Image 1 (tube, rainbow, N blue to C red):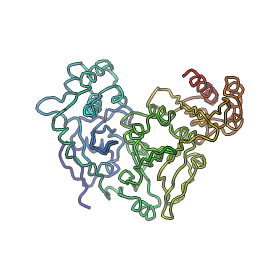
Image 2 (image 1 turned 180 degrees about the vertical axis):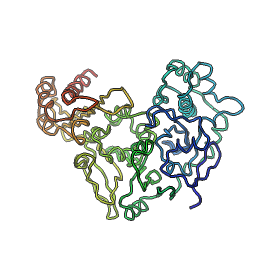
Image 3 (image 1 turned 90 degrees about the vertical axis):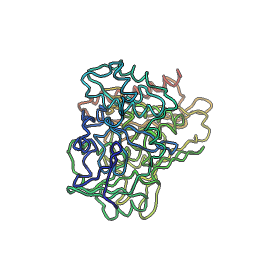
Image 4 (image 1 turned 60 degrees about the vertical axis):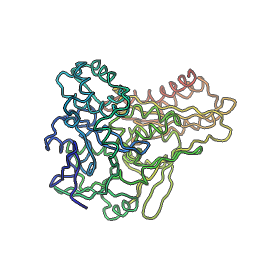
Amino acid sequence: MTQPYLIVNNKTLFLKDTSPHSTLLEYLRQSGFVGTKEGCGDGDCGACTVAIIAQNQEGKPYYQAINSCIVPLGAVIGREIITVEGIAGETLHPVQQAMVETGGSQCGYCTPGFIMSMFCAYYQGTVNDVCIEGNLCRCTGYLPIRRAAQQVTGATNIQDRFTQKLETASTVIIECEYGADGDRFHRPINLNQLLHLLQQHPNATLIAGATDIGLHLSHHTQHFPLLISLEAIPELQTLHITPESVEIGAALPLSHIQTHLQGIFPSLDTMLIWFAARQIRNRATLGGNLGTASPIGDLSPVLLSLDATLSLASPQGERTLPLCNFFQNYRQTALQAGEIIRSISIPRTLPPKAIRRLSQSYKVGKRGTDDISIVAAAFTIDLDENHHIIHARLAYGGVAPLPIRATQVEDMLIGKLWHLDTIRDIKPILQQTFSPLTDLRASAEYRQLLVANLFEKFFHEIECD
């Protein structure tokens, strides 16, 4: 492979003696692109937002907003990056001009991040609250910033150097093998390459969007001698939708899933709205969210409630495993040595005699969005023609060492009438089903109340819908 490089504001920068595990933000600022700021270093505040040229759901190049503070430098080798220094020409870019005219900046520390989020959305035609949901402002106030967004939204037939760039840009993510400062980074380009690498390096750490491990890299709290990236492997980027099921590649970004599966699984739609912010969803993946085996992973309860199954790949072949058998204990899974999550399959067909499916998810945290769950819950109830329950799934996160279903309560619900009396009868049992911890976020008693009350909330919302 030629000397590793990345392209920043149309300038090719070759990497030399820089650790691939440095964050993109660190590299940019050390290279003089200091307009990009570090706020939280966690991917929460958006001050570090930059744009990369990525591939959208239709396979075309587009400008994608990401948090540079948690992206390993190795993950952007060969990629094109635009920072706030690169968007103005002889005049300010329209999104910059709008921020000036509406008074959208005071101290200015968060402004570059807002600008870059709005920049990406500008070329997609809609600049709104969603595009800046991952950007925090601590002094200006959001009204001027929202006015700036409203001023530039809906632009059509844009002809400038950035639209011209998209006409010729490549979205191919190249193979990469790079090491420096004692750290190594591999990015294979097919599944066989990946499995071979894992045989050679069984202790390697896998990343896709790196939104979890990126926190350790940003704060230098943990060392990973070898990272292997999954984001250039087409076998892990698939999405197959049939009347019977949906199969999602383990490394497909959540923003793609959010767009393509809208309306198919209501509980998944809801949880993705509360799953961090746009910059994170542009990088995070289902496989990563499940593979970390976090007891507070947002998507695990949803997929448990939908009876998802996993396709696991290794040099010996593939096997299928129900998700309910995947989580073994705290941060422990059923993955064997050299095995990876290839895809996640969610059935769409109802059980025999079922005529109606009720499904929804909930996330309770100290903040409405972009926060770790106190409790996450997802429910699926199938009813027959007489309004009796013939299938029940009640799944939770934040109440045990692993994402878990209330299987005892599920069994008790079978055959019962879907009625408020049934819900009230089951609540005391549901409240005592788990023994959660007390921590800084909430007490065990509060979590137990949430377990029961969220199920009743589900009933009332469904019946009032």
